[in-house]
Length: 110
DNA sequence: CAAGTGACAATAA
DNA sequence: TTTATTGCCACTT
Image 1: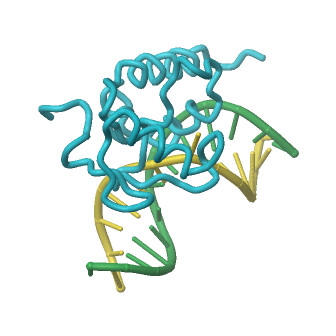
Image 2: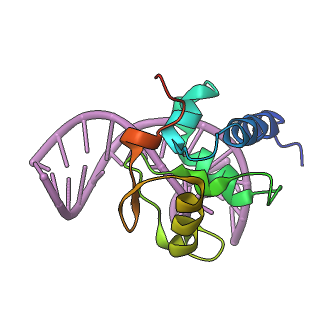
Image 3: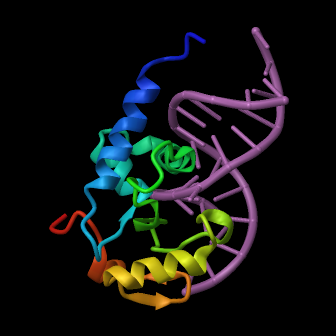
């Protein structure tokens, strides 16, 4: 396999960043990608979460689209489950599939 | 080796 | 304003 180790470094940074998201807050793929220094890998941020090698430690449910939207077949049990998890932590929802990024965006103070 | 795919985002129409 | 397309970059086939 001789695959570039940078991939693991990139993935590791994504996990580190996502794990640092406080409860009641959410981050977007583009924001995370930019925070780790690779704004062009926004897509791969989601890819890293899909890989999710550490279920239970990586709050992937706190990571949403730039608009705060959650894809349907994305979460473990469905967008509804994810919405419930976010509401449980205090995240405000504008719609059934959109979170209030204006109030829950992370990192705060951008 | 080349082409296709994908938990996104930004820009164009 | 919403919808459609392109760009990104690594992985899969």
